[in-house]
Image (cartoon, rainbow, N blue to C red; front, side, top):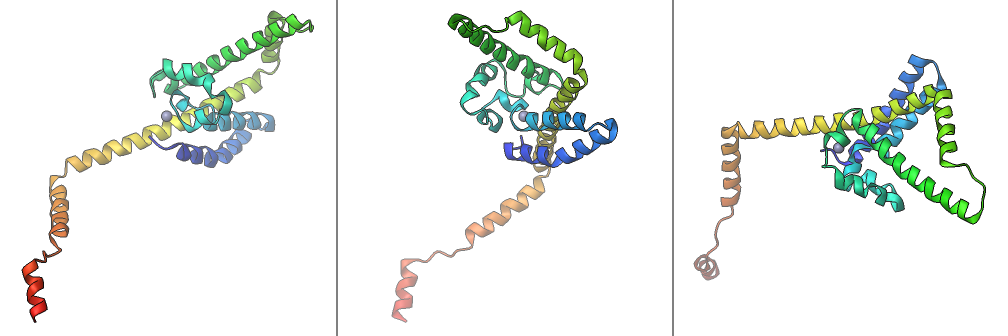
Length: 205
Ligand SMILES: [Zn+2]
């Protein structure tokens, strides 16, 4: 598995290419912005490795505890966190649940104090209207999030495949191993033993 820093590098190096290609395909700067933002967020803090103690998890700072149940429920690199599309949808639903809970809690407090606010239902209607009105932006954002996750899956897969290949090559070439062993034996046997007798002899001379 590549390190978190390697994933960061992959994200940052691919970002200009992604932004440029989106602009070229859609001819819309706003969509290029949303795809790139989603890609960056997914690559840096909202990625599949939230299912373990990772750099993504640590970047949530004081809010990192939000992801503890997620980690406990999922095995690292399970299909629910590392599966194409399903992983991103799962994380969006998971975070939306927390946001919803937190929103309800704040609404409860506001109503308790006597502040007039929107009800939960009104907020849902506002969200639905916003999605209907800006569907292209929401789709662009989702595509960016998914592409960020996909660059992660791809790097994970490439590094694991390379490691497996290197390991199988090492085990299927016994002669090379034998040569390596011989060379280490030579290195080990190089320093000559200096006995007390020889020291004595050299002193006498
Ligand atoms: Zn991973």
